[in-house]
Length: 320
Image 1 (cartoon, helix red, strand yellow):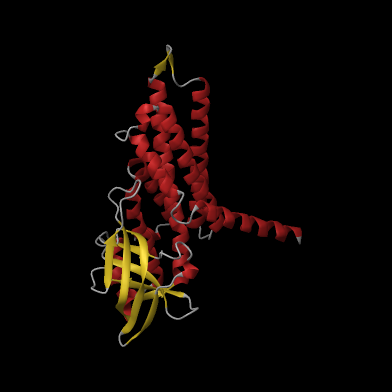
Image 2 (cartoon, one colour):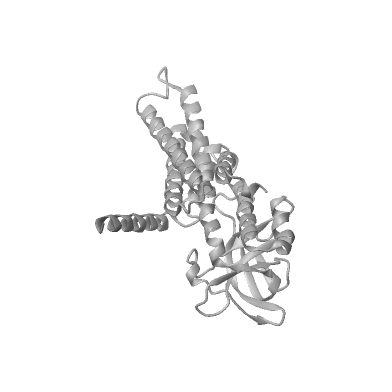
């Protein structure tokens, strides 16, 4: 199975980078690798064959339904809850900004089984009458991806559809940030190459545009892309080696996504009026780059986590 390969995440970020160069929404396909890995870790053989194996073989798709209108990425504030049902659980609550929830075979929904309890993960059929899925409005860049809101009104989940608790999902959620980083790196790489090509071919006052201040800008863009590539591969290698690497993943996520925003902005500036046309590629890359700074934890949240972790390391050294 592909998600058990020894260089899994090193390979996945390379695939994500290639997809980011072409069309960032293709990256949502890779989230199925995360879900298959989670199900492989937490389910026994029968549930794996029913839900996990079809995803691993490309015969089915799923999506995580975590975000809620009142909590966003704050999973401690999730209000979706369950109550006992004779065959399992009844789930009530609302999820929002869930990509392609109207097209997948099943949802993985986080819900609280009792006040103050940890979250549990349930497989939910989006075609059930007690699970209403509606599309939200169009977005800045995600053409072809439907962001949806999900209303669960006493959805009846059999006991076999309880996958496990949130503790088993956390490692896979952290790794999803590697996907976002890889997609962002691909966007930045494509924008850089478009800029290099345009400035080499374009002449102003008899000389190529790629000189002087423009050359300095191209150098800074290249430094950002290559530095992001090296650090992202380092974080992926740590995960492949069995390390948790939470700080390294956060650093890779912040750096790669910020670089993508900076590089695409510079690319629009260098390419000029052609770069501003919606018929051109670099304008779309700039819009897609913005998404990566928001999803999988806003970069401000990751900066706070990074600062806390490095602060703890400094305190530990100071007491030695």
